[in-house]
Amino acid sequence: MAAPMSRMRLLCITGLTASGKSGLALQLAESLGAELLSVDSMQVHRGLDIGTAKASAAERARVHHHGLDLVGPDERFSAGEFSTYARGVLEEARGRGVPVLAVGGTGLYLRALLHGLAPMPPADEALRATLRRDEDARPGSMHARLKGIDPASAARIAPGDRVRLERAIEVTEGTGRPMSDWQSEHAFSDSPFEPRVFALRRSREDVRERIALRVDAMFEAGWVDEVRRLLAGGLTLDAPGMAAIGYRDIADHLTGGADEAVTRDRIVTATRRFAKRQATWFNRQPSIRWVDPRPDLAAALLPEVRAFLEGS
Image (cartoon, rainbow, N blue to C red):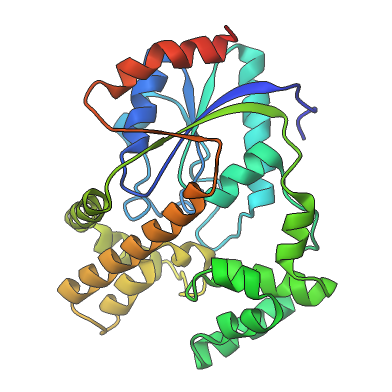
């Protein structure tokens, strides 16, 4: 584990899915001679490339990326594990004198990185197996169970987000205290950073259209074949990687479910709902500075960003 860090200046680029944050971060990193750290809970999985909008080989050749392909699609990678990994990356890069920009839209990962997480018990695999069986038999049962024991967490977690539902239930039932209480008590106060967080602000209509266009581009890029390869390799629907938006929908299509057009529409709808949840979370973060997209945005921000990172 990396040694404790003094307050490090860290630039973060975040925002809604399909808002253009990765492109902005790539331009800034190239201008600064910086590296990028992906703050995305699904891009950590190997083999999930197209559907998670992972940086391409060409983009990785332009700027070195961290946080991609850390575990298999059948492995879990918690926010706490990400925080430990990411802080190690940042400390090592600081030792080399190279800035690293954090970019991504997973709110919990970003909070874990910047402020740490509340100390909570380890995973209970037996309970998780039971929860999965119950959810398969009665879809919605996990969300209902969590709502009965921790309404605050249930209000924040989508009914289809099995990974976060499992965690909230096991923490609450394992400790006798709602996970929301653990998080509130901790208040994410362990911060070794002096962050500056930018987010791209787009209209709701613009985001909805960009999501539809990106889903179409993913299908054209071979997303269906990507899922076909994962299933052929033995990946099951309850694997952590399959929780990424669209993967289970495409798996259903490949096993005789909805046709491709209906599957595409379902994914667009699910992604738009995800963006709405992201917007709710980001709008509650007073430290975020919203910027409007424009062709020269990276160049316009560069002097301020450089001055911030240099401490001037």
